[in-house]
Image (cartoon, rainbow, N blue to C red):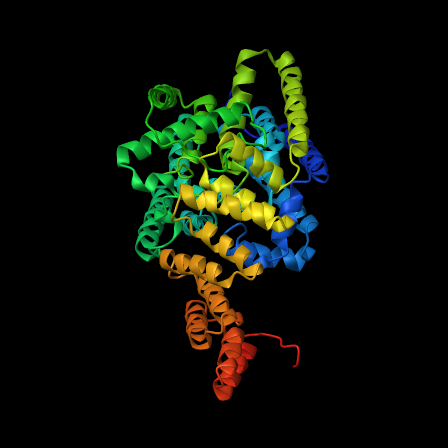
Length: 534
């Protein structure tokens, strides 16, 4: 099969419709497999607190509102939404890839993308919706940047899409580089390319967004937290080296998906620049350099896919802070667009057209079986993090996550031991201090809990929850006015949150200031608080 520049005829349109039907069937099968996946129990716990999901950036706020309006608040609606977005991405990929190659090759690549374990797992997991939506924006932008009239309108639309993508995930920073790759590919095929105005819109928006984030990001957020971003304390050369080594790990996951167990390590990063790291980085750079030279000369689909994979993972590397997701394969979702196209191109190049169908069918069966096995590779948080602690005993994150799972089950003694272990490994681990304080508070050990909340307030002075909990610990010890001050601090940090005002009313009432207490309660009511005596 050759990559020709043939015109889209009625027969080719029919071929695209046939491929679309196959892809829809594949996505539905993937969704059917996910129905019995116990991994979604973790999603259900998150869904119970919509505000928590939004605050942790697991799901964009507008996405939560849309899903609640369409499907209500439940795991089925979230899975259905994710499936529809995955299906939309497959359709966009089929349309966009048709500009780069033949209808048949675009169809094979999209079908592989539809059922690949990394892609299907992203369909399953609530925390991966940002990656799904980012892929939607990027593919939409590439479709919009194609040939046609109204170049200015297209450029404005591209600018808006870039903004939406950057609101969703850091991987949207890859869009300008994708435009360059596609531009070169289309130019070699003699097809209309993105205009300079479109390139300027993409690059200008991405650069402006990055500068704005750098100057507006709070000083205590994850971007400079060595735990969330362990590379922050390293030199630039070490950061680049380790990030490339992490890219090598992603490449291994891309070809041989790991199990949902201690293999993931929950973001554990070895920041030592070892000889093995250097060899891996050297091999990876040599491979990418060879592919880049080949792409410059020939602009073939295989090289385009490999470079797509590399560019997609660059913004999601550990040079940029990442969201706490147990399922790191979410970051492979966008990369799998290029990986699937490269694999399809490689198969059609190495085999005759009569054998391609059987080879791809066998591959899809193997990947489907892997997806099913992956769906079963989950029991609960406690078993996952217990295995991770065994494999990575020096991981503060793993100990904290295991402690949280134990605390949820009511095993507070064991949970506190792991919280202490996490703090011992990383004394500035604010989340571990906060959760340890909550565990101690539930046992009535208020002075010890107050000590933990004090540490959190020192590490994260803008953390409203920490100030609220500090006020509660002070209140329990009869320190009414210090508790009131802590509640006021929490209210200042989150003005629309009624809880600090309710607690402030209790503290002021206990201190004997009935008028101020009534005013605080009235303010909480104006913020939407519903009181039992209303």
